[in-house]
Image (cartoon, rainbow, N blue to C red; front, side):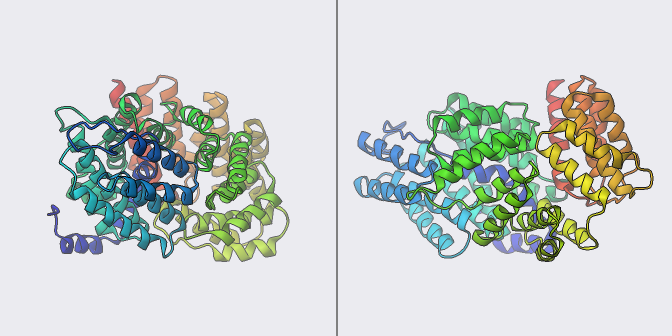
Length: 533
């Protein structure tokens, strides 16, 4: 029986509607872990009698081939292979597990019926197979995987009470196989690490929900567990590299070399649409726009082959890559392509906003306004909410010269062109008659460019301006300048000043743009400092 009855959980969620954002934030790492857990090789040797993933070498070969098809994003081929495996070895869980996993991938991307319904049916079938397995490490691990799959689908459906219960069950299984086991099961370190990262990144406003459901952990502990999977697991190692790259970028300032490791995995799997896409998005996050374009175009070319399945997100991120290289007409076409093919709500608000910005930057204000009016925050996360607020601001009037300059400065910085960003932004920063919020944004973005160039003095000077004169209290420029000033101090070895900045970042209780993300990153930074002492 779950530790808390469903009616109690439901009432708790109703009592705090904003708690819906908790799982959207906390389960990011878990989503990727479930999408990529259990790697391309299957183990035919049991740890205990009957407790195994497959029973024969032929079954192991078929599982490996089918899983490779899944990683390459050839979903129909993967389904056929896992179905054959189930017929070949009806008593082993590998076929049922593979089919449920493939259905999850497809449902998370496509979102709409009949995909979620197919997933739940196959996930239920996996439960029936696991019930007949002898109790052992593989069964416990796969029970955790099954619960995690359900949690992710419930999260996609915004059924948050069910999400919490399934999430709790999954993390309990992974903990049982690692921390609580006499001999830890290395394959479960990946799920364990994802659980610890998710628990450690919960915003404070949702801590009561996390405490109620027993979620405990820190981001550094989660990274350690993921690293253990990389070092010790036989099956989960490549997937642990992918999760490490995502967590490293989102919460660890890339201190663990995750993006480089992901690049090696992508290079080792040159036919994978999924890995090319993921690596391209990570390069985009590192501001390597040309490198990101290369990988995302490779993903698009692979996706165009007859055997590949749709992955519409490629168009959005390729459009964003071109947008950050000032190729606005091309970018607008790709944003429109994504909006036509979007299988659900993911990235729709951001794509609509960026399409509007791209059109206005090409001089087409009328089409831009149409897109601004369509932006809606349909999900409880920072990005959707910021997109809606930004669209409302852009509808007020066409770009002024200063606004256009700041947008072009932002695209230059985001595309890795630091000197260009400084050149474009400095006139706005130095214009005492400019709008105060716009000057704060120019100061913040100039500070980011100087920080990237290693000019700490100028970075801190510009951050100081944004902190002292932030303009709109709901804009991100002042609060995030505090955080990035902490990064500058940390990199320079001034730990006391860094700690002071990170703690100050956490003191701001305004719901400014990306406030949840800032809290997560500031807490992770303080965790790094604590462990270094």
